[in-house]
Picture 1 (cartoon, rainbow, N blue to C red):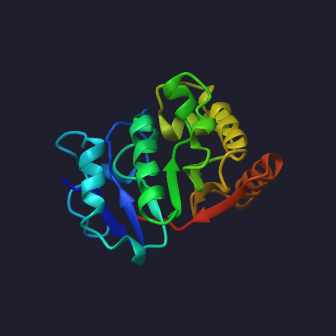
Picture 2: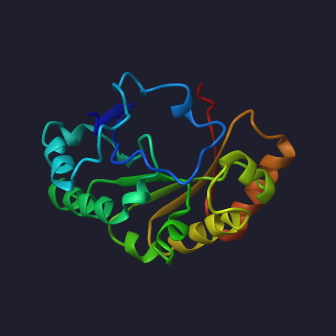
Length: 201
């Protein structure tokens, strides 16, 4: 199983294939791997100890960030993820940790999960996708329904109290200039960074 894989100058952690979304644009619909990683479809979810053991096979100093992002939503295994984060922080000189997430952690766990990120996660990158809640549901096809958009924004607003940086992102070429401006306005209103990330196919 591919638990850790390299993308550019970062090391990515693939701990689950579970996700409450079935996004129309999800890369896992058209590929099995990223950056020649080998298949990111897991035979089973690795234990926390297995993930820790995998880190020992890599020279962590050469990576800019450790990024929790695989073929699933990382916060589906939030408790285990945070245990791995504690291990990383304690073992690798407070290495920068980022989570790429759909921002639906509070809905997944039915509580405000953002205080759990305190001291363990440095950067949270959330897929905003669109400034419109109806369009958001059409794109993400998530199991939580129309309230998911507001829940995602509320998560972003709350988690910035506990982490160094929060980024909301959309994909280049998928929105009009007007829609991108609306996204920028949303981000400004809650005090987070807006990023337009490159299209990948």
